[in-house]
Amino acid sequence: MTFNKLTPEEKNVIEDRGTEPPFSGEYDNFYEDGTFICRRCNAPLFSSKSKFDAGCGWPSFDENYPDAVKRLPDPDGERTEIECANCGAHLGHVFTGEKMTEKNTRHCVNSLSIRFIPSG
Image (cartoon, rainbow, N blue to C red; front, side):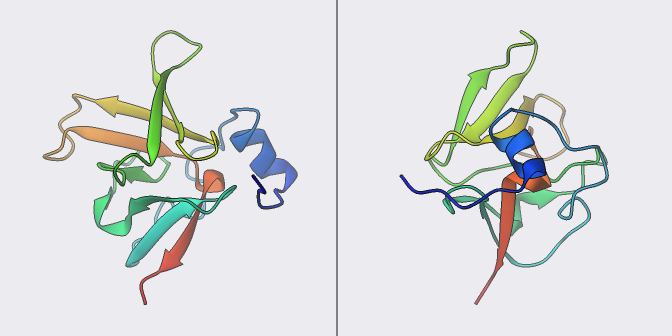
């Protein structure tokens, strides 16, 4: 599988499972119509329709495209990591039970892990 070339900052998040600082990502306060894809392999991950303002400092989505995101126990033993189901790129973490949306799910995603493709 051929992947997109990543910057050192993108590699830190996507390959080394780092986290960008809160409120620093280009998609935190971003609400346009389109699709968010994996920055490493271009697989579609989230619709802009599922994005909401969780106030946490990272882009938040209450739903991913079917079979696009894989959930894994985080090494910290407390959280659930999410990665691209296609290439294994680290995206962030998923939280449930917070009652922020009707779906009761928050995919907390690093902007460095995704890229936005506008509708049309």
